[in-house]
Image (cartoon, rainbow, N blue to C red; front, side, top):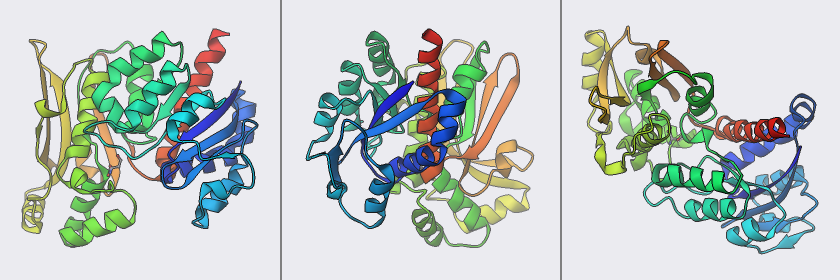
Length: 347
Ligand code: HSE
């Protein structure tokens, strides 16, 4: 099938997906019968462009690389805002990759609702709307006969959500434990290697792992958002932001790290949740001193890991990148391929 895509937001992740789509265009067609055209882009800072017949994405990437506005593109309709782009273009898949505000979910929440109400599929790496309204948005998608894919909100393109929802289907998942934030894992690793906290944080920002405001990373808020998402979406337990105990890594000193090492242990920021015998939920984000024998203790730098506790298989751990341009861009391709697989199987 052929899809008409519109990007809402055109930052690093959108550019990562664009590069992958350009490079894999032939493979996608041959292997999955998946064709596409990007018909619109709307970015609050870079401007917007719409051409119902499709844009030349190599040209768009070149404009962005040169630091030029997207509306310098030589043809097409310019000046449409995000909601107009969602409602008034012929796009049938909306790629929502605007700045994430995990506390309010906006403006992404409005974008996603508008798209679903207009019977357009949504693929998104935006954590805010999933933290706030995952259930409601999934219901809205179902009601309108379209999909809402968000593989990238936890562990970027490392398929944490698909693993639980599809590959492990048939298991009862009673809980999880993971390293869900790359920035803090990178900082703890570098501090063990002798770097100061400030230097390590600066390096994590340079490498593009950290959020625009890294407080969200180091204080455990980003990991908390992911715990809330996994509880709601995978464990099926409704919890909100303020129901989870949280502590970040800002109080961990080089001495603490050295002391743990002498004792055969390593500090990790762990997000976890477990459904208890009585059906209630325990969830928290806290730094823990793990014994080096724990599989999560060996996960270093910006790498993430997540262990699911299942009834049939015991513990299943997935390890992989949790941030990065192509690594996160790729998660959107997983969502697009899933939409295509669902629609093709219904034909
Ligand atoms: N700032 C996040 C991290 C990016 O460091 O893991 C991915 O959510």
